[in-house]
Length: 303
Image (cartoon, rainbow, N blue to C red; front, side):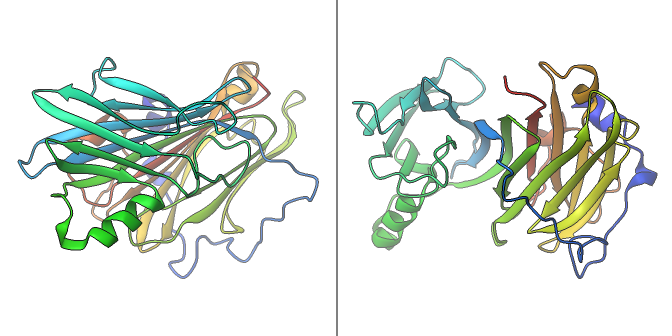
C-alpha cells in the first residue's frame, strides 16, 4: 500500500457536493442484463476489541470459498498460531454448530458459532448474509459478536447478558477474480446504511485503447476514468453518510501484470481535520473513532 498512497498528490483530492455522492451523481450506472459479477474468493475483516481492562486485542476473521472448500478462519492477536478454522459448507457432512477454547496471553478465549441456518446472498459468496452467529469471549467477557442471530440473542438477554467489550471493524479486504464487473456492499459507519458499490472496467486492456473505469455507489457514478492506461492511479474524495471518504485506485497490474496481478481499490473514511491521505500500515496506531477502510483486490482474469 505504500506505492498506492505515495503516488497520490494532495492537490488531486476533490470534495464532492455534500448533497450527493459526487458531481456525477445524476449519472446512473447502468448494468447490462448479460453482465455477470466477478467471483468473490475471500473476505478478510480485522476487528479491534477493547476489553473492560482497557486491553486492546486484534481479531482477524477470514471467509473463503473455492471449488473445493468453503470455510472460516479466526485469528486472535497477531500470532497466526493462535487461530482455528471452521468448515461452513452446508453440503458437506460437517458439524456447523460448535465451540472452541483457546489461550491468549493468559486469557481464556472461547468461540461459539452456528451456521446451520446460514443464508447467502449469492451461491458464490463466502460470507453468509444472515441466519448465523459467532460469539467470542475473553475470560467470560463478550469481546465480539457477528451475525443477526447474535444480535437477537443479546436483545433477549437484555441486562442479564455477559459483560460486553467495545469492538469495531477496522479494515475489510475483498478479493475477486473473473471478469471486469466487481460488486459488493459496505457500511462506512455504524449508524450508516449499507451501500451498493460497483466497479466496472470497459474497453480492451491488451490494445490499451479506449479503456475506461467507473465506480458507482448506490447506482450513482462517483468517478469515471477515461484513457485508463494513462490514469491507472488516482484518487477522489467523496462525502457519504456525513463522512469524508477517500477513494483511491491503482490498476497498474491490469496492464503490466494481467495474468497474476490485481487492481487495488481503497475506500477509507477520515475526519475533516485530516489533511493528508494515509498509508494503511499506520491504521492500528491511530485512535480515531470513525476510521474504516475497505480494500478491493480485483483480478483482471480468472485465476
